[in-house]
Amino acid sequence: MLSRAVEFIMNVDLIYFSGTGNSYRILDTCKDILIQSGCKATLSSITEKSSINGNAHLVGFCFPVYAFGIPRICKKYLLSLPKVKHPINTFVLITAGDPDESGFSVNESTIILKNKGLNVTYSEVVHMPANWTVSMDPPSKEEAQTIINNGVTRAKKIAQDILNGRLHHHAFNYPSRYSKLGFYKEYYLFKWLGVSNLWRDFRTDGTCDSCGLCEKLCPTGSIHIVNEKPKWANTCEQCMRCVNYCPKQAIFQKGEGSIKGKNTYYEPTFKPMKIKNRKDKPMKIKNRKDNKANATDAKGRAADWRS
Ligand SMILES: Cc1cc2nc3c(=O)[nH]c(=O)nc-3n(C[C@H](O)[C@H](O)[C@H](O)COP(=O)(O)O)c2cc1C
Ligand code: SF4
Ligand code: SF4
Image 1 (cartoon, rainbow, N blue to C red):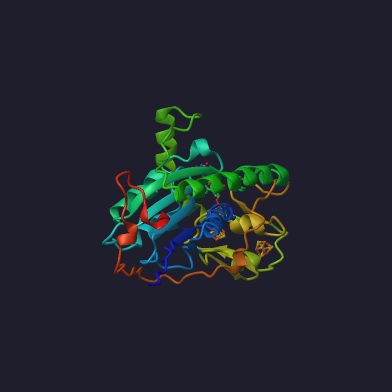
Image 2: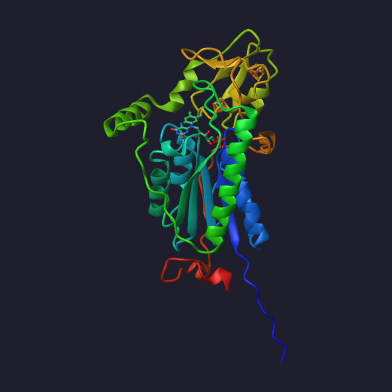
């Protein structure tokens, strides 16, 4: 009698938010490793995908850290995910300009995901170039490339760890440049002021030539060219895409001064023009009919997709 071996193919759903490409690059690297290992993996931005794939055996998220937490849009996205009936193994990666300063970003994400019934088996912070150009000077192109290369190496290792069923949770640390009290003061000050309220302070200088690139690139549709100049809306997430891609370095924030003469930063393989922006729709998830493939072994590993 003929017997045919049925090979199990793991479906992986990878979801990111990225202003300047770091979080995209880290998850895209994981995608490559997963595909090389025989998985079927899809990568999407939260702006183009309204929910996770209910048939996925593994779901991975990657977000940047903004002021010691995850961006408002990422939190909103995670909160809008429906509760799953059967736990799906999930990992969370955070990209940070300074890995010592990731604050509560991992915890904020994992708490929400666990409340949604997802099984968070792996979380980590990955150092990538800092992109907050309005308030600091990002690394030079050469320095940035070295940081990216190290980040990519780290992401490959993380993807291998995940494939090997390794459990890992990033441990929270107080950023070393603050005292405990100093950190909480800064964290709550930012929370209270709201990083995303800084849209009010965006300005352009006289070199803006009304090219409209910022309007086209904004992941949240928060820029409109009015009377030949960009105007910002309160949906802005402070992702710094408009600031860093503006060919004239014309965008700055009131109180911070011009960015002219500073380095600008975006991850060179990131192609934001190709990403669709999602109109806000209610999030839906189809529950898997057969969730046996999500079963975990005694150590909480997703064992069956490797057999
Ligand atoms: C508004 C804002 C706030 C940020 N806050 C932090 C922070 O608290 N800690 C940190 O390490 N990096 C911080 N960064 C740097 C980004 O987290 C980092 O560059 C990230 O990799 C950017 O990811 P992206 O390219 O996917 O958008 C901040 C960047 C921005 C724009
Ligand atoms: S990208 Fe720069 S130059 Fe072009 S419209 Fe926007 S601010 Fe002006
Ligand atoms: S307006 Fe600029 S900073 Fe705000 S979300 Fe759009 S691209 Fe990002």
